[in-house]
Length: 221
Image (cartoon, rainbow, N blue to C red; front, side):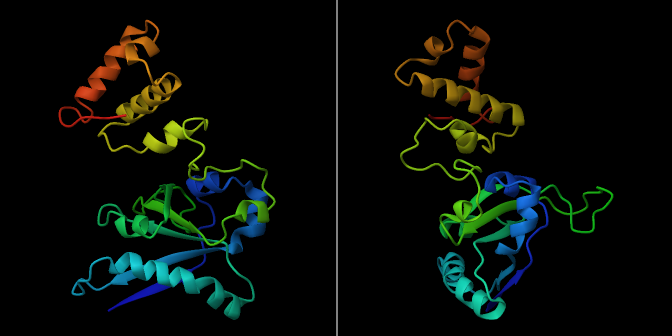
């Protein structure tokens, strides 16, 4: 019906490492605590609603104990990769994995920066909620998901919420981030008031709302 495979983690992943918040020395010392879910297969002939996310959840429940029995220690994070040219990653999100960025198209043997690999989305799942404290990282390290109480007070919330918005152009995504951050400062006012006379910004804001993808759909805050 299917199969799972685990392997050693990527030696370096810029977006993953930024999300964790560690430096190169800390990464070398603690990288063994990450496990890579390198293979996840369910045969196309198997049709069962929510099967993929359920399998992921069951596997992660067993992984720490099984890993400790085999290798003598418990991992604290699992990573995996989704080729978005073929899959959406919906099963990972349904199983409460977090997308933290994208690879750069480089494999372990890419010593000459040829970038021959497919660029993939990076997903992670913490097996220990307080893993940063366990690693001795300073409070506030990394770019973990926003807590419910953080609201719009977190410095990076707009980037985290809207930075990867698929608007067809990176400039539109950046405009959305800037507009959302500005609007959050005074949520009770129209954007024209928030912009304080910056009419090019106002024009860009309303153009984004009217045509977020260059001609179709609407953006709502």
